[in-house]
Image (cartoon, rainbow, N blue to C red; front, side, top):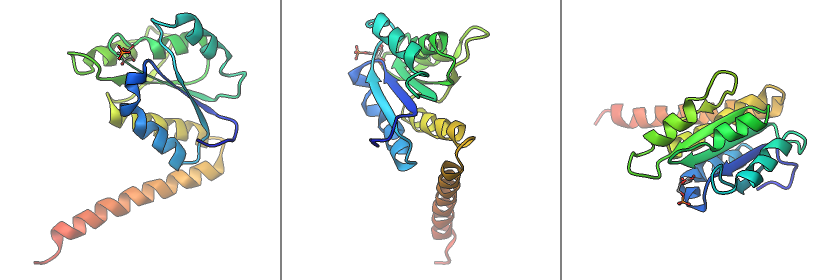
Length: 168
Ligand code: RP5
């Protein structure tokens, strides 16, 4: 984690959410985005979560990423307390494979938006990518790093394609 002032707040609902969130942390680090990480629950620590979300903007945070499983109300709680953009990551934690968390995260009432990404680790990575794109609106250097990242992805696919299309 960078020692610069964090601009992204990543909150996960439980310590058990750490594993699927690794791609989020790795991506923020790769893109050089300073972030801070908390474990807080909309249901088990509502007062503490509320305090952190309410104070996030004043603490210099620009984007909130909230990840939770089951009846995942964490991202919604963040969006109800802060005017910052909130990205919700639904996690697969129970018998419904994450469909429960997806619906709880995405089905917000009008006026309280949560930008919801895919369930699980792919969504966690994309939450960081989406936060990066939001921050890049005002950061030309980050925009350059995102362009490089996209070029890297392109090169990887083309290299794989070259392998399968190479004459035997
Ligand atoms: C949610 O309940 C958490 O985000 C986690 O995904 C799920 C299970 O939590 P634990 O019982 O493992 O703490 O609130």
